[in-house]
Image 1 (cartoon, rainbow, N blue to C red):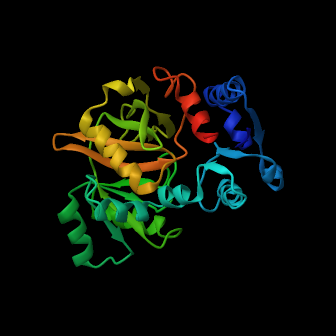
Image 2 (image 1 turned 45 degrees about the vertical axis):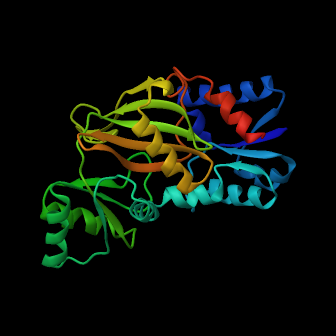
Length: 288
């Protein structure tokens, strides 16, 4: 089969990401399929392929979403499909999915910009202090801020509301790392820990004015706890059958899902260190 892999130039700037992309290509060719990297200028040729694999950053305003929709209309198998992009990219939609399906997650509320004493006081009373503030569309910890008091909350939320009509305000759960559970067709295909860098509070933190990423430690998917596995598979089924990455906190009260992402990171030497058959599994799903 002819596989198109939609990328942007930035996908080749980090060596570990470039190596992973080349592993996808070599795996597909070893399995008897063609694998071609395509870019924005190639969108008009999408009907020439049998299946589409998106590796560029996705959200409903991106070229990746446009080509995903177009490929689906032409009947191609697509990872990431438009529904998964729309759902996972929007933290407000995820907030509703978590609540409606009793997904264990940090307490959260939607904030529309009402700064009355009753509303602000109610947020801190129910969620505690500090709180995490997110815009609906976030990527790689961007547009995710922490407010330690009401004054910070007002300042941060007013800034974020310049580009959003609603914010997700979430209970802060301290941890040394986030579990990242890679899911494909509602099955766990890789497992790792995304550590919080020292002096930070999220995986990508600004420390002394510089963006710092925490360490990634791969763990065998066979060692996943039954509770985390069941939680991850259950949530993925509410989204679809695509390729997802769940971020989960482990607490004294059990596991709590922070979010589920479409288009999860897969870098050479990171997510693939132990379960290195993920390339073959993803290619097999693309051509099935």
